[in-house]
Picture (cartoon, rainbow, N blue to C red):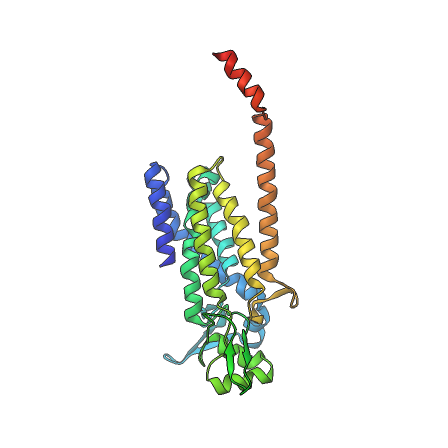
Length: 293
């Protein structure tokens, strides 16, 4: 759903401008393919030992066959940043083959990406992945009381429940057995959906007022890393991977690099624009206007 809406937004904008509409539709297939491959590859990279050493095969009970675990995407294992990298690789190849101005085309393609991510996080809720930290306290009777509104509870069989059953402290595991679900968890999936919706609205405003090609893309590659890094502090899925154990997650590390590169790019573009169009004080502009009159 998110992918189709994102495609619709980009296609509609391109159609209104009378430029790149067919290219947007053609690129959609390659973006989806590159995104899925990239999302899976990055996830497997963070858990290579599990997929190639300890649990390399998965049995499909319905047909009685075993397949490589790397292909069992229905068991979870798609990373957004991997999807973005895979989609970017597809974009570079596609734009080169079509000889399309990359920055101008990138602004159109990235416009709907946050909207796709809004629905992608709904999928995380359905799968029970990317969950938040436990947010609860016990009352005097020992009953679990959630500390925040919209806290989420996942049932047995969900990725969150099964993982916490293996990794949580014993006291929390005992409480989970009593509840029959996970403890109340911060709804990081819904928070990111909400944040992505705001990012989408900001990109619409930037697109209508942009000063240079690539501005929408750079705006996104600054805003999303900030959003993601902030929400990572409230995540509770320790299996997602860390560069510095318990301190800097893989996604935060990537976010830091992406946001830094984007800010540097904006500074470089701004300096080039200032050189091409030197700054003029208001008094100088008024004098020039008077001379022309």
